[in-house]
Image (cartoon, rainbow, N blue to C red; front, side, top):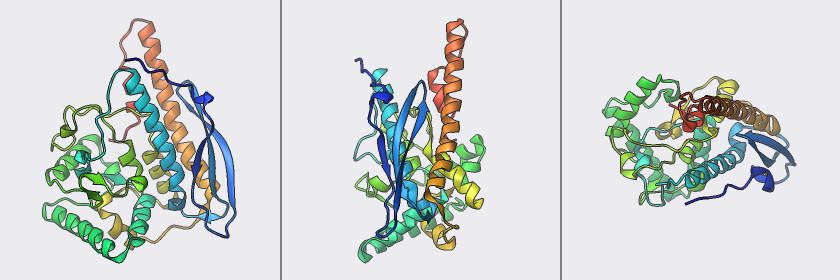
Amino acid sequence: MSVELPPLGARPALPLIAPVPDGMPGVTGQCALRIGQDTLTVAVTVPAAPVPLAAVLPVFHGLSNALVELAELREAADGRTISCRAGCGACCRQAVPIAPSEARRLAALVEAMPAARQTIVRERFRAAVTRLAEAGVDTRTDAAAHSPDAAEAFGRVYRAQQIACPFLEAESCSIHPDRPAACREYIVTTPASRCGAAELGGVRSVPLSGHLSLAILAVDRDLENRGAVLLVDALDWAAAHPDPPQRPAPGLVEAVFARLSEQLAAAFALAAEYRARHAAGGEGAGPDAAVAAQRPA
């Protein structure tokens, strides 16, 4: 099956909007991101006033969705099918590192729930952390800072507990529109059953051009020198760490986009190197490696 990929430049600007509180002015601007040999134009709307990074996360989550969509189109063009479906929660029992700003956003999301639902969700978080502690799994760790071997060992122990994400209901994400960037970026073409196994051997993750999860985390580190938070520890962590000083929203968007652009440029350079080696008859790591190199460990 052949699928024609529409040129990004032929598309209208992608609207990326962060909510602007009543009484606060907003500002809209356009920018272009180079993705491979094409360009994606986005129109960003954010509050004009200083805000915490968590307030502009919808902009980055929207862009993450767009990068995933492009990756899915590439997979279809190559004859591969995405395994992920609604009702499949196989990957929702893995350790998920998120940025501090995302932890605070999840905590605010829970805080806004009706009291009865809050109680249920908070109890799931408490039970998950308790079970992990009993198994000797330290949730208060910067998972993103692990070496690849240490990250795999940690993930193996975590997965062995088979503890579902506190937001998982009927094997579906109950906060799907508000899920963290790392969750959006995890898509596979191999059978879903492999994602839920203690050993992740044989799982093929779909390569992305860039990872907003890493860009957001990098800017969070710059703002307050804090590392990744495990999703199951998000509520406790957010309660113990008040918001950092606010920054002008346009500057926050610019900082995250700059980090993403570094990834996109690196992926483009790797792809160009592969094509050059292939044209010369040499061996390269393959086109997937050009973007897979940007994936978190």
